[in-house]
Length: 150
Image (cartoon, rainbow, N blue to C red; front, side, top):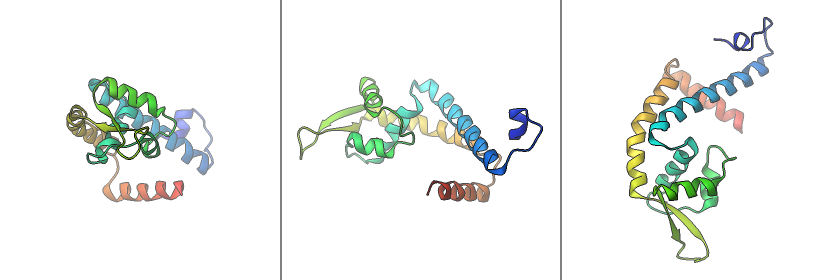
């Protein structure tokens, strides 16, 4: 369905406005689909993002600043997200060897196991989100979106 039909307007929108609205609609739909896929695992998209960041550390802990920098949604309250992961035993606090006042976060085995269960579900969701695009279109869209963010 095109943007004009969604907005119930009979006149065409300016191209830039239509692009921005399309991006916002696509983002909302993708976020909703990922959140729905994560519901059975009782984890939010932001918590999932933090777990993937921690897994990407390959066994090394990360401080809150590192996690915040790598978050997809920079508006998230990283401390609160990490606290929830700690409560669920999906992450653990570590004391930094070089600076004992510095607290770092590491993913636990339980967190890694959860990600192993989630990975195929998210991959299937990503397939569903992009099912109407060809591989060259996905590549082109990635390039264009990255170009916009520069």
